[in-house]
Image (cartoon, rainbow, N blue to C red):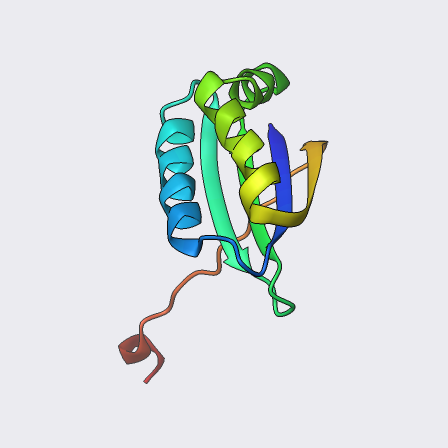
Length: 109
């Protein structure tokens, strides 16, 4: 599995409505892309946008990076929207997951 961490800050006068419209389109397009697993986005306390994407393989990441519509939105991002961004691409070496068992209140009485 490959994880992409994308952090960004918008320009003060960026068109937020247009940005959201393009972000939704990119999510829709990526969701249909072979090898796409998941996407999460949140805003950090300092206002930085953080997106985390999971893909099955590096090949699927590279194909997504070079998708023609995505390339156009990347260009627009640099020209119109972002004052700064960083991208980290990581291959998962090890992964764990834990889920606590739920106990019903009535069984504790």
